[in-house]
Image 1 (tube, helix red, strand yellow):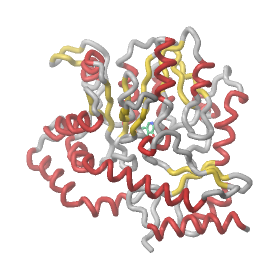
Image 2: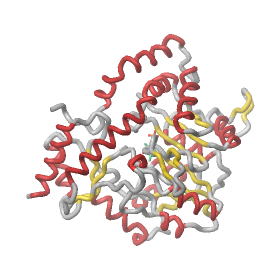
Image 3: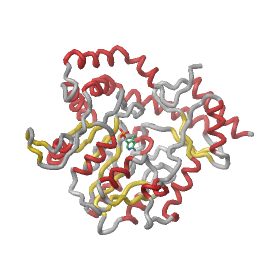
Image 4: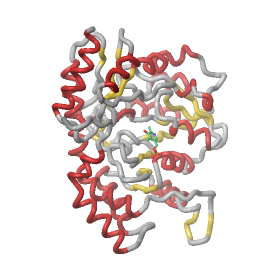
Length: 377
Ligand SMILES: *Cc1c(COP(=O)(O)O)cnc(C)c1O
């Protein structure tokens, strides 16, 4: 059996080596390393794939989120509601822009933001909501957009984990994750569902004026060369990374299907087990792209299970071990532990198994058997 990896980028690369290498070689030949034709081509390719009017490539997913927020007219002290259970980048950029992060609890079945918790957290100072499509499952966008419209709030989708997922509205309309809010961000970090070979990110919006503003912000606030109209940043997607992404984007649906299939095999093996809750797909099957496959382990020592798996050569991880409200940087005297019942519980139960596009049946069987054996003693 091939060695099990949490994310197997090497095997994936072997399957696409010729196209990726040729794509990179073009950049080496044309030497347009910054803002070269590959970047423009990727922008167009992604706009088409997502069916969104504007993609603004940038340096990474954290920048994308920060720049998206810089483009909205938010002022220091404005409250931005987001989830307690996500990667820290989400709350980090809110704090960095001197906005006030308001963390809320999640839905235990989907690991995504609880719409009820958002509703309860809205105050006259609330200006925006940042849902995260955690582990690849689209958050409850229909309800979130309705709530945002009712209270006149911006919605910024953190789509770092959900690229390629599709949300189906009650009327049957389908939209890609990252195209429903006012503005969205994504990351092309190598292990993400659409990963490049270094850092990369992008912002999406259907709003022409906002897109114009964002294109200036990523480029030192310049709209005309050496005229700096707003305070901006320097955040670019390298041409070489765009070349990698141009080679990989046509495979994104296939890759996401491979992830879904692996998830389905894991869940089938654990079906009905009293000590394991497998991930729930709340919407249609295409609403989840399994950036992570995350179990909840009940009535058993999760950390001992993790150690046991690692001893058997099975990598696994805890996403995320500490709720954000308990992190030193984001503690706030306004928070009460009773408001974070779900995240407090889940951080003790979650265990993410190897998830990537190259998982083999033999590997999946070894992983599930090892877990089931551990739980049966
Ligand atoms: C990965 C990730 C980010 C940050 O992306 P980078 O490209 O690493 O900066 C932000 N939010 C979430 C939810 C992520 O998973």
